[in-house]
Image 1 (tube, helix red, strand yellow):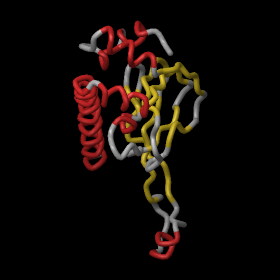
Image 2 (cartoon, rainbow, N blue to C red; image 1 turned 90 degrees about the vertical axis):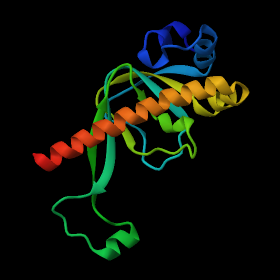
Image 3 (spheres, rainbow, N blue to C red; image 1 turned 45 degrees about the vertical axis):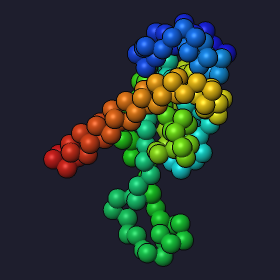
Image 4 (cartoon, helix red, strand yellow; image 1 turned 30 degrees about the vertical axis):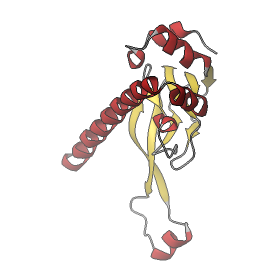
Length: 166
């Protein structure tokens, strides 16, 4: 458990009651992780959502490697050469692994620490039980996660357009 006061400092948690912040804090733990560590990989089941307190995390997609010949057989056999492409960088106060709170609870991208990080890890399954017991709380949190999704999609769109133009 962490102090609910830690959560109160961050915009993602604005509008939550003291009781709701306490419930979140009861299912959270602070962690420190070094640079270059994958928090999770695309497609992996997620059981934790993270609030970044310090440091940076790169959100990455695994794409076919550029300037490398690709054969259909390589793709079918899972031997295609790939590379990680950073699509965004997340900083303090931002949420990572929001998919831990939305079915099917799998990562839509990978996340790798760009620097040493300090984060709060929320127990996704425990929070889902809380949300089932208090649907209004679950609705508010779903709205907050939807806001994060909207921001990430908008950032991805801008990055994609910049890559096409540049």
